[in-house]
Amino acid sequence: MKDFVAIDFETANASRCSVCSVGLVIVKDGIVIDKIYELIKPEPNYYDYWNTRVHGLTDEDTANSPVFPEVWEYIAPKIEGLPLVAHNSPFDSSCLRAVFKTYRMDYPDYEFHCTLKASLETLKIIV
Image (tube, rainbow, N blue to C red; front, top):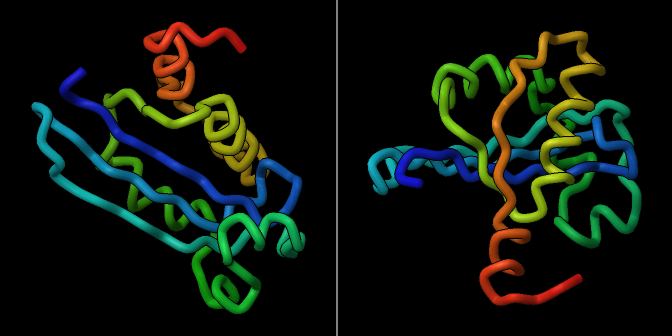
């Protein structure tokens, strides 16, 4: 695959819609053409201890950040038509669907691929 977007979400709490950051790397013809990292004010807007322990983000980091629809308005045109790739994509795809639902946005049915699954298959590891 030479054209894709690597994507990773972090969440503020156990709710999948509580995305508090997104990182993307856009690859075309096998070349990185853009990198994006945005902090997002989560919804619901509170941080669980364990989530903060994983990614280090707190309410102070995102207090003045834009909400998801504002961030995605900037991102969407850059990734249009490209497949999304994530390590453990069931998590990231469920976050994306959940936050679209929370903000009553039309979900464009993004194509997701999982690098975790692909690596396990390549290494012939059964989980």
